[in-house]
Amino acid sequence: MALSRDQIAQRVAKELQDGFYVNLGIGIPTLVANFVPKGIDVMLQSENGLLGMGQFPTEDELDADLINAGKQTVTMATGASIFDSAQSFAMIRGGHVDLTVLGAFEVDVNGNIASYMIPGKLIKGMGGAMDLVAGADNIIVTMTHASKHGESKLLTNCSLPLTGKACIKKVLTDLAFIEIKQGKFHLLERAPGVSVEEILKLTAGELVVPEYVPEMQF
Amino acid sequence: MSGFNKVVDSYEEAMAGLTDDMTVVAGGFGLCGIPENLIAEIKRKGIKGLTVVSNNCGVDDFGLGLLLPNRQIRKIVASYVGENAEFERQMMSGELEVELTPQGTLAEKMRAGGAGIPAFYTATGVGTPVAVGKDERKFNGRDYILEEAITGDFAIVKAWKADKFGNLVFRKTARNFNPMAATAGKITVVEVEIIVEPGEIDPDEIHTPGIYVNRLIQGTFEKRIEQRTTRPKGV
Image (cartoon, rainbow over all chains, first blue to last red; front, side):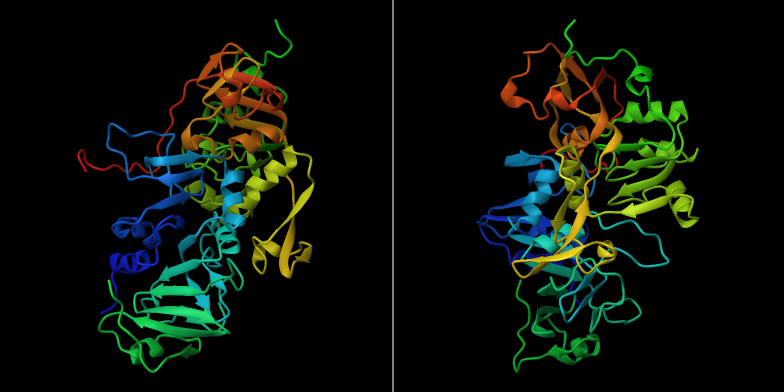
């Protein structure tokens, strides 16, 4: 069975380590915050200028001056700090964020990522995604493995305009956990009940499959 | 009255001198920390042909979106746009020029502009449409592109509190682009919720020193929320 959005987030959360500063993108990445393993402290960075993002506010706590990068009202966790946008991207660009999780339209075997623009359709902009992929060493891309029409999103070459070049090393889809190295996809894990053949069929770029591919554990 | 007193009495006075075709650098992220009354004053003045530099362009009936129906903005430099229908229509028809700029690069362009640095190298955007036409250079084996700084004829800023000398304190994530925008205007206009006497703000607590501020006005704010997300009590 392909993973649900929550299951993708749950698997990503297993990559969190105690003391990590983490930036979560909009969509599935945001859900990762719901699955932080017990006994682990992470601090969430929101690129509009908040380190230590807390949960949503109650009606009483609601504050128009306190939002996350998705423009949702939030609260601050204990030990949070506030800063301006230049400072925020200094931490991102300067490589100080331990893990970045973001979505994408396409990823290719050379670690290129396309995530911000579909020519001919409405162009909304890259927001902070280009800075995040350029600045972070440890990035996990979350997305569905293929489109609704069965077209692979793991390609030999991205077809859409790039968000970043040669910067992605790990992709977690609804079918598989994949590493990108030496110009190839490498299959690390498969979703429970999903066969290697199924993953191969929906992976357009070259996929290296080891003899044994474990099922994901949650 | 001290020569350092930046307080003006009306929004008309605050935006005096803004004329057609000028560049305006604006603070704010989404609808958070936007200089909402200064934007409304630009709408009232009917200034046209503006180049606006701001992370976003408001929504249909609030923030910078208010300047769209009368075609007051000719060009927008932003990282994320399109939360409103009129914006989409003008962009698709080519009436509105949009220069998409990565968010961190945009913040740094304002910061550099205000700090007298004409350009800087960044890895952000290398190999993407953002890099087209820009100088590229390698440092320590990695590719970088040259991004030019931004300054504006005017900067419009929202802060929480100021003293009359224009020393500013921002509140929570309403800070965002405002401190950089404040440095990047030939004329920087700031609107705040509270104005106090000089000396009443601890100098250690000041986020933006008054040297960057030309005009200061106290306003009342709607502070519209774009995505109202809450949790039930007791969770």
